[in-house]
Length: 345
Ligand code: KG4
Ligand code: ZN
Figure: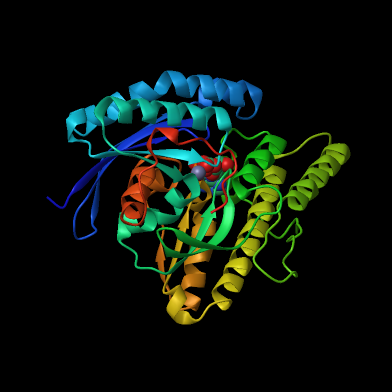
């Protein structure tokens, strides 16, 4: 009939997700349902994701996520034409849980199974939401990722550069912890920065002078730590103004680094290759960062696409959609599919 209905699973970090996506013959796609069961409560007291706890929670939650995705889409399992699952990269226990669940569904229904690279899922999302034509320039920027990609096709991704240490979201989370602001750090640091003076503390812009698109955020974090400690030593604590000014100075440094490296990425290609600049990942929710990146797109006469947050943070719709795009050019994986903790694009 020309339409394809795919059920996707995602469990490579701390979200257990299932979704159903329908792709039409003309290439347009609909997200029929998308369920994301977070694990924040389970990991909160540990100050980070604990792999063993994540894996166990995924194993417990995947069946519920699948059930909810079918219910939310008002679908029976018989409506599903194929299954897609994140087969890496990620925390291996969670990826294994997802792959096992997907194999069970494929074996039980006799429908094909496709293993999908998690990063390919993020990178193809602008096509799911906005039918962005190939090729396009992409910045993936979240708590776990930070890289520039030139997306040539559903299975050809050129990595221009990425972080050599922390991801920006991770840095936002750490700065929030240093300042005593709530987690996740991104939104609380952004909020504090709104009232801060971003010129009181000028933090380093790591790697800005180095050629290429590699980024680094760990030196920035260390500089913030030193500034905070000096203020505490001198004044016996941090005032609200100190907090806001540090947050503003930190955010300004991140904005500068991302903007400058985005310019480098554009400069590496002729204009035909960069008609669209896409961003995805939780950090793309940041107003200042988003505005700066949109400005760079304008500088280079490119369109700017930032998919809705629910589809540019971890989700399973992107996995189902990536499988749909890749299907024409590859065979299904079948029941021998294995989980890959490392899987560069
Ligand atoms: O994409 P995401 O939900 O999960 C992965 O990391 O894969 O991204 C979460 C990250 C967290 O580190 C969070 O602090 C950051 O995105 N984040 C933000 C903002 N909202 C979320 N960072 C900066 N500004 C924000 N408004
Ligand atoms: Zn992700």
